[in-house]
Image 1 (cartoon, rainbow, N blue to C red):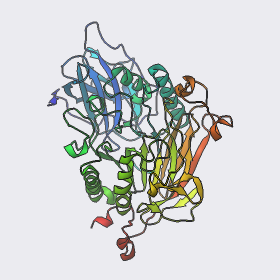
Image 2: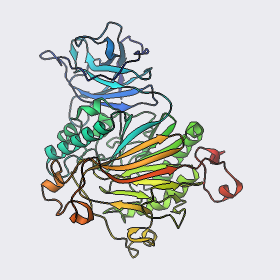
Image 3: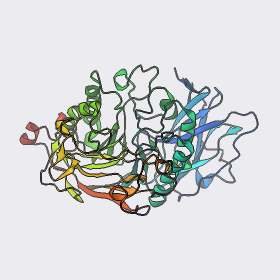
Image 4: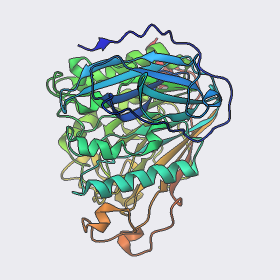
Length: 501
């Protein structure tokens, strides 16, 4: 059981408008004092919330102290700083304790400084900036850092840090960092978690965690990340909930309804349970959303090693028609360490047979969904693209317009260089880009260590383009019509929850 730590402080609005400043630092701790490690800024339930999670060396009352950066002088927080009490629990994996607290009542367009701990035993100070609570925004999506999978934690961590640095230098106003899962290679290995959580960018921008298959097998994932609106019922776990991490959760951000599910649980009715969860969230909150974005780890339109896995074949049967019916706009996935962007998919089929491969503009139409699989963000492991094999999975054969690719995918790409996905959310469109965050040069652990035999486009025949160059870009025009008798009969749906009434 988690224990609520009382501090007597009440959550209050914590700032005034301020331009973004650099993170501040303070003296961390006196000798023998409680130490805080693994601090990570997480997404909250909405624009005015953030969640901070960390490890602490002692079972003592802990808080997050927050103030507008403009009021923090010489490393000293003002007396009227807001404090938010933490929930503290014993670590079941590595000893010590884990803590989390929700920062609430944040104001828009404000830079805040925060630190965790208690009086006389504070962590270093970090900062983050809120932006407008309505209107356009960009978020970044990262696939499988999987720190440790190359066999060299330091090299994997260096590639991960470089991708964060590159992507946020290019997109400093990005408002969310969204995970595709597999933060680490071995769920309970803290040295891998330390390398994953090492970059300070994870204390400055909110991380929306997703659980991957390498994050299960222990409680470290749950201990490192506290997520909003989370249902940790047994149906949303793989195995015994007492020893597994996961659950399904949702949040809203500037008109986008994000729903994150634990795709590790898929057998024995789990897919149906996930769909019930998604349906319930869309029914309650979809009407207020301009877009619905689903996030989970296992890519159902996988282009590489996992394309024909039996569990993915099952998800390909269970998910697509339901996602079309529920008015999902975009599905973000990981797991396959390669990049793909689907055609517009409706009820598990290509919506428009004439849609060309690599089209840079698509219209979704009723029930149309775009599926994206993210490549490795760290360079720790890459999977090569596979040729469609109708004999192995007849339902996932070649694309008639591009037989080297699977029928569902407009673009499939693997260059053995690190990439990340940028999503621009606009009132009348979504813009999805896959961007290079590295080249064949270090840091790129899989290349450095000889885990792959080539690097660059066209199986290494061409030189890798520069950092920041575009692998793929598409403008997605969403469907904004109303439900009709024809569309209802076809189980295709507009964005929102009209289908559920």
